[in-house]
Amino acid sequence: MNEPTEFDDEDAFPDSVTRDFAMAMEAAWLKTKDSAFTEMVHEYKAVENAFIPNVVDNDFAALEMRKRVAESIFKSAVTYHQPWDICLAYWNDVVHLGITQIEAKCTMTWYYAECCRMNGKAELGLRILDPLIDELRSLQSEPDVGEVNASFYRQQLAVIGKLRAKLHPQQR
Amino acid sequence: MSLPLGCAGSIEPAQPRQTASNGKRSLPPITEARLQECVETYHHQLSSIYQEVHYRVKVDGEGRIVDVETSEALVDGQDFAACVRVVLREMAVPNWVFALRKEYTHASTKAQTSAARGAIGDVTVMGVEVVLEELLAVVGGTTVLFAVVIVLAEGGVANAVEAIEETTANRRRCDDKRTACLDTYRASRPGPTYGSSRCEACHNLCIALEGEWPSHVTLGGRQLSCK
Image (cartoon, rainbow over all chains, first blue to last red; front, side):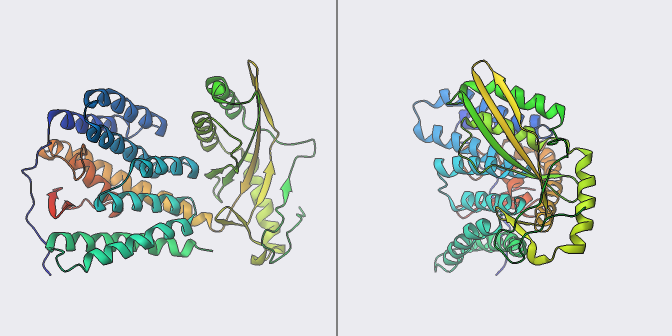
């Protein structure tokens, strides 16, 4: 099967508040990418506190903004190798707010399993990766899967499979 | 040095405990001061006027702190707990730890078999525990007793350290590419989820791709370009 090559670059943010929020999150990342983890948390939370009042009448937008902040903090906790229980606390925040799309599920699950690997908790990592692999395989085999989604599932199965292989030797 | 060894093959062999002859060794003074600051800043979060908090700081073969563990529930106050962990994580490992490691490694190669490897959490270790002198921090009416044990760990920890180094290197590579992305039109394009940006989404995938900036990210059957 050929890999799709056409990209949709005409996308725009749904409104100016969403765009400004995304830009503010990028600015927070740029400002703190070489800082301590606590600084990152502070900056991301500052963006949340600044933007949530702008969407008080829009429950969906408020929840999604909280999710993006939680996801960014959690990802920082993993990639700036915070201790296990800090990583776990922010993962719980992400899970509590909800992961609905398969794309976000793949991303966040990968980071959680990576946190497991960095903390020598291979079994916990494998425990969360294996059901996701089953889910991706099931989605991949749906008759109306479509070229782009099939390509995505293949990519994710490869990425997750690689992490799984790294977790295996850590198992007792 | 002769070290007591655990029963080979037991599930949790006894860990040798090392204390100085005149009592226990102390935390580094800077760490003590920083723990005191944690209490000063967050003592209002603690539910009782006396708290005992127990931590195990794991140090790898090269003297790096690879994990900070607590078994409790005893620590209340999320910010207080985070503060303590960050301080212990950033603690400069005292030089005498390296001397102990050398001594212990020498002893262990003579006497300890692989069957005597113990388990701490999910990390397989073969190590020695050093119980540090307890630190008492008193602020207002609140007293916190810090009990810290340094665990000189080997074995499975090496994999975790390798993972940390690998992820840090991948993250740095992807950071450079995300910074470059922010100088392109993609900086003003959305990512796959509400309120996410394209460069961030590409960065998320880049780290999972071990530092390779992806051509695109996907959402609901559409591909959004990264380069």
